[in-house]
Image (cartoon, rainbow, N blue to C red; front, side, top):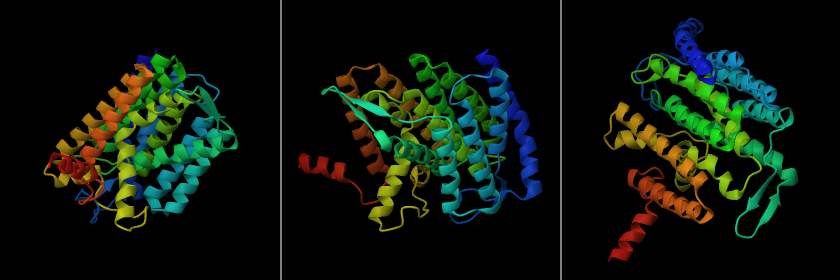
Amino acid sequence: MIFLAMAVAFAASILLTPLVRRFAFRIGAVDRPNYRKVHASIMPRIGGLAIFGAFLIGYFFLRPEDEHSTGILIGALIIIITGFLDDMFEITAKAKIVGQLAAAIVVVSWGGLQIDAINIPFIGVQFDFGYLSIPITIIWIIGITNAINLIDGLDGLAAGVSTIALITISVMAIIMGNPFVMATAAILAASSAGFLFFNFHPAKIFMGDTGSLFLGFMISVLALLGFKNVAFISLIIPVIMLGVPISDTFFAIVRRIRMKQKVTAPDKSHLHHCLLRAGFSHKQTVLIIYGLAALFGVAAILFSQATVWGSIILLVVMLLAIELFVEIIGLAGANYRPLLNFVRMIGK
C-alpha cells in the first residue's frame, strides 16, 4: 500500500507542477535574476505548492496514523503560507522567522513533539532537558528549516538533497520500527522526486521558499519524531543524515563571523557557489552535492548500527573529512585552513 501511495504522490507531483507553473506566471510569483542568482531569465517560483499538493494527495490516500499528525499538518500549512507570502511579496526575514516559529510551536504544543531527554554513553546518566525541551525542539525545527532553505541555490539542488534525506529517514524509520515516519517520509520523497522532472537543470520552475521551507520543516519534524528520547549517540543520526545543509549553514556562519559580516547577510560563498568557482558545471555541481548527501545518508545508517566506540570513530573520521573538504573548496573563507596548515607544519 505504501508503494501505491508513493506512486500516487509521484504522479500527482508531475501533473500538478505544470499547473502551478502557469498559476505562478499569472499571479506574478516569479524570480528575477540579480547579482546573487545563478539563473539568467525570469522563473516561476512557487513550485512548492505542487510538492505540498502532491504530498497531501498521497498522505490522505494512505492515511498513516500518529498522535502528532494533526499538529504536523497544521504546522506545514503555516509554513506553506509563510513561504508563499515570501515568494509573492518578499517579506522580511523577521516575518519569515515568525511564521516558522508559529509552525514549530504548533507542532510542539498541539502535536506534543519534544526532545525530553538523552542518555549519555559511558557514564550511564540520563539528562532531562526539563523546561529547556521546548526551546531546544523549536530551535532544531527552525534551524533545519532554514538550512534546507539556504541550499536552494541551483536547479534541482534543494529538491534532490531533500529527497535523499527523506529516503534516509524512511530507511531509518524501518530499522527503528516507526511506520508513520517511514510512510510520511516516503510519500514526501516521492512528491519531491516528481517535482525534479521540472526542476532539474535546466529548470522550468523553482520551488521557492514555499517549497524549501516546507521540505525543511517536514524533514526537521520527521527526523525529530524518529529519534526523540534516545541515547546521545543516536541523537547524532539526524544531524549526520542532514550533513550537507547543516554543514553549509554552519560554515556560512563561521565565514560571516570571520569576515565581520552579519550572520544573516547573504553572500555567494555557499557550497554550490564554491564548487562552481572550482570549475564544475551547474549540473556537475548539483550531482556532486547529491553524492555528498547520499554519503551522509549511508553514514547515518552505518552509524545507527555501529557500537558506541565504532560510532565515535566514524564520527571523528567524518568530522576530519568534512573539515578537509571545507578548507580545500574555501567554504569558510579563502584563508581558513587550520587543518591543512597543521598537516604542513607536521610534514616539515
